[in-house]
Length: 93
Image 1 (cartoon, helix red, strand yellow):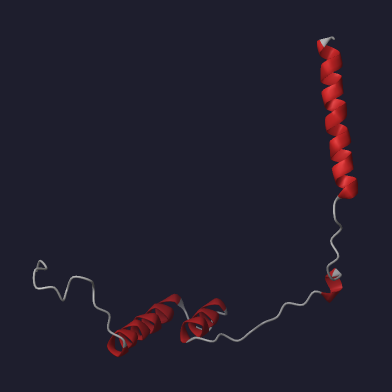
Image 2 (spheres, rainbow, N blue to C red):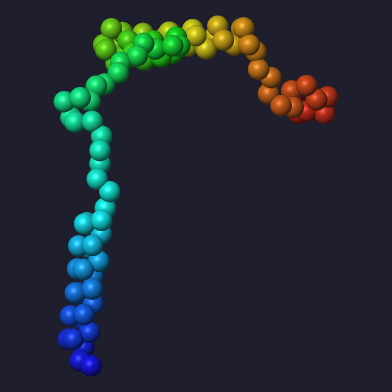
C-alpha cells in the first residue's frame, strides 16, 4: 500500500470518529439563559462581612487590614494556640 493511501485512510477514520462523537454527544439541558439567576447571600462570618465591605468599596484596604488585625488579636485572646514543643522541658529556648 502506498503511504498516501494510508494517510488518507487515517484522516478519513479520524474525521468519521469526530463526526460520530459530535452526533452522539449528550445535549445540555440546563435552564435557558433568561432563567439563570444569581443568588446573592449574606456573609455568615465577620471575615466574610469585611470582605464584602471591601469589595463594595465601603471600607478601604487600610481599614480592612486594621479590622482583620484586631479580629486576629481578639481570636488569639479567646482561643490561644500553643506551638508544638513549647510545653516540653527539653525544647530549645
